[in-house]
Structures are given as C-alpha cells and as structure tokens.
Image (cartoon, rainbow, N blue to C red; front, side, top):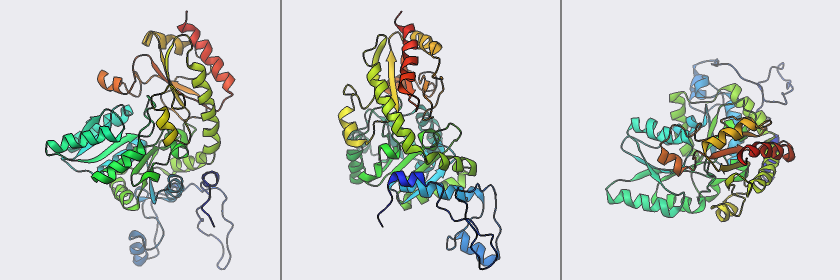
Length: 408
C-alpha cells in the first residue's frame, strides 16, 4: 500500500493510537475514535522486569510525563509523517524546540551561524541564552550558500569552526526565502548541522528534509494548531539527531503538555483546509495592497516584485498566508492605521483562523538593536499581516478603511 497523502495524514491526526483495553479477558473493547487526553503524570508497573523493559524501550509504555506521554507520542508520529522525517520531538514551545535542537548538538566554545533578520525571539535566544553557555552566534547577511560559505571560511581563517547554521524557510517579517537546496548541500559538504525554522511555510508549504539531513523546527502555536489556544514546538529530522534532542528535552523539562499536544492534533486535522484558504486570501490581499496610496512596499513571496520571488517558486509549494507591508510616514501612520481597523485585531502572533496584524518594531523584534531590526526589515513603518479564512472582501474592506487614515 502506498504511503497516505498529506491531506489524509492531517484528516486522521489523533486517530492512530490504540487505547488501553478495559474489556473482559478475550473480548476487544471498542476504541475511541478521537485521541483520549492522558493527564496522568506517572504510570504504574506490574513488576521490576516491566520497569526495565519500558525504561529501556524494549516494551511500549510510559514512565513519567516529563519523559513522554501518549498525546506527545501521537503528535510526534503525525509530525514525522508530515515532515517526511524519521523522528519528531514535541516541545513546550517553539523556543524550547529550538533550544533542544541546538544545545543537544553544541557545547561551550562552539559557533553557530545565524541568518540576519531572524525572528526576534530566536535572536534573543542566540544572543543571551546560548552566550551564557559559551556558544557564540555569528550573523550572516543572507540565507544563501554563498553568504554562509564566506562566513565559514572567515571563521576558519581565524582558527575557528562553526558547528551549526540556522535559517528560516520564510523569514519573519521580511518573508525572504532561504536557498535551502544550496544550503543543504553546503551543510553536507562542510559537515555542519543545518537547522531550519519552517514555521511560516509549514510542512504544506515546504519540506526542507527533501534536500538532505537537517533538523526542522516548527512552532506548533501558529498555523499547525491554528486556533491561538496552544503553546508548543516540534523538532523533526534524522532519528539519531532527534533522539539527542529528546534526551536534552527530557533532562531540561522541555516536553509538551498533554492538553497542548491534544489541541494541536485537533487543529492539525484542518490544516490543509485552513491554510489553502488563507494562502488564497493572502495572495489577493498582497496584490491589492501593492500600489495603494500610503503603502511604500509590499512583501509577499508570490509577488513578482518580491526579492525572493524566483527562489520562492523553486523552494515553496505554497506562498503562504503572511503578508508584510510598509506604510509611508513610519510609526505615526502605523498608529493611525491600527486605530482605524474594525475587523482585524492587533495581536502579536500569527496563524490563527482569523486575520490578525502586528507591529514587529514594537512586539516580536522590540528587544533587538536598530541595526538588527533593519536587517530583519522590521522598521518603524512595517506591519505584518497574518491572513485568515474570512471572506477576502471583508478583509480588504477593513484594510481600505484603515488606509484612509494614511492618505489624508
């Protein structure tokens, strides 16, 4: 039988685990159609032999929630299938997933090369969290093989060597697309770990592992859950690399909670339906915004005007639901624009079924220096729109009403 299509994997998310039987001996109990929520923090054993068998992985089962639980296992099974990965690890947040991926493969004295213009939380983790562990983060101006090769050569000339490189498939908020095929080849050639944050693209928009070994990180909080009621993250990739991250996550208590895992599985069942509609709406919104009075620039990979347009067609199977645009007049115009929105809420996240808007300069990238915000394209006039599933006409009407404040 051929592997199921991704739409089938999604529609059946949470239906893959067999429940523990409570039937009388010799009878098969009916199984729940939906994944049960497993809230127990600890499990009991028949005897010492079973403890050893479960603890060493020779027998299926669970010991203690920090080490794993049924909802986490089912979510990891589904995510590994979506990412075309050997294994997946579900964590308590996107930052926890990134931390587990990096810390499990780096040690004090190592260097990680990071794309300039990464999500502000990632930059803070690299600059503050990893620095305290003695791991240095070096910024690379563009997510291309040429730029990273030059950075690797520069380090080598000083007797240093990077152990990992990190990029975003689609950068936040510039929506610049990384040259993943060339970066994957470079990582193999130089023997460095490639870490790809695929949150904006999702597995439906890009599967980075198709170009070679890497660790793919996703924020479950965003499109994968889709309902703004979960905090979670996932790491997917080769089994050996993911299991190293799993040991780190278990030791540091970075695992996802049962409820967040359960809610994510429920949200995943409609990802292909939600994201398809959101991407269609986003393309329409981006085309409508381009050239409007008061709009200085529109950033959307599906627009021919976007700097990454050609690369986006090669790397992405969908241009996604994110649109960034810059208003003339900077922060003053941004304040006026946000004040006139009636339908679209100002909210510092993304991926919800409803359209939301945020101001990276004051939210996700506020802790960065002016130089770092410029590199991320998170300037004082830029707004980031996460386009939802509403009727496109209603989204456009609200944007038009708000833009009137910028053209008077």
